[in-house]
Length: 519
Image (cartoon, rainbow, N blue to C red; front, side, top):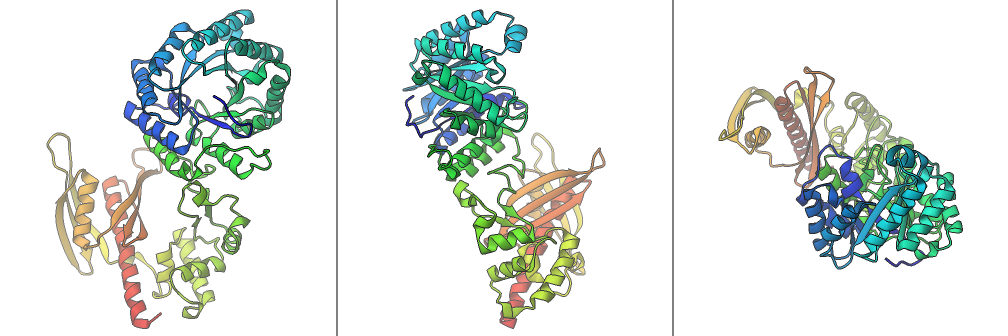
């Protein structure tokens, strides 16, 4: 695979290294979805799997190879002839493909895992590369645990692999042991000492055991590497691999510092691809995760919010839109300042003359201390209500009964709500107990809303832990939140939706008062 000197090849191994770290295997359909999303993201090489490992993996690699149009499919193989044959056969239908073969080169791996001499290992590598070349001229060779391999042995192995026909040489920090300056020194030494290194692309595959995967990968680029092996969301063995989204955005943002380097990644597709991988792999993205975490473009501190409101670049080195998010998030908490409250009210359509900022801010702080987080509709309510208590809610759960089961049982819910001094009762069916319950509640209230998120967490430990359900619903283009807490998660689900609907009703009441007062 040829490249320009300023082009960094992005080699994604989510379907191989990422998947092997999951508690369960991905189905062929799930792998195909991820592969096609990675291709749309602009990934150059997709490691589709380890074909020799199982019939299912072989078939997945084969199907993905047939489906890819732009990305190069790649399969992993040990330096064993049958492994290489499996990759060659699985990817044969592709117009072009890569065989990635590897063997350990560090002393501890050679002596204690392989139990061979280093001469034997070099011979195995040379034979494997030569055999792989009988299938394709795109052969990658990896020196497993290169970060702990004696430099003389590493240079010798790299030279022999290139002479045998390897076109990409991967130098992995397999156990995440090295530090950035140390790792870049290894890359630089190989670049300077191996006489035929100009005949291959130097690649790196860094693990995150010490949290250095992204830093090590970027330092390797500065030393001459031109391929980074990574995973979406940083998935992978143990602490994971270098995160695709991190290196891609670091290269894009700091291209000038990195000598004009660039990738083919379509950054606006990052958020969507991250969400897909997270969902299919059942691996939630940590809220504080760089680039794709829910808190990556959120601001809570009053000082930060004030800065961002004046100029986003004060605290945002990237725009959320540049990676596919709709915008940043300003959390209204007790840490928020007056400028944040004023800006939110302005976005809701209120002029400075419509309220006393000092009075509203004092009331906001009391509410924030009580609730933790305040939403825009809460803030708006402070303009019209002297207090915001649950006692003022329009709807209260009185009784609920839900029936569900396996087989031919149709999930059914019966709910009675208190509305003032009266009660309303309704029954409904659904695809499941929560669906039946929510159908019932929306019929009783007459509020049309679309459920946009539903999350259950255990609040405490043990069998008696409270189940906390958090929901967001879309009502006429505006998002409302609800939370319910109960030892019964079905009851917590009902309370959460009723909470959200009460917020909607309060918002309706505000708009009526607003029309009457002309505010």
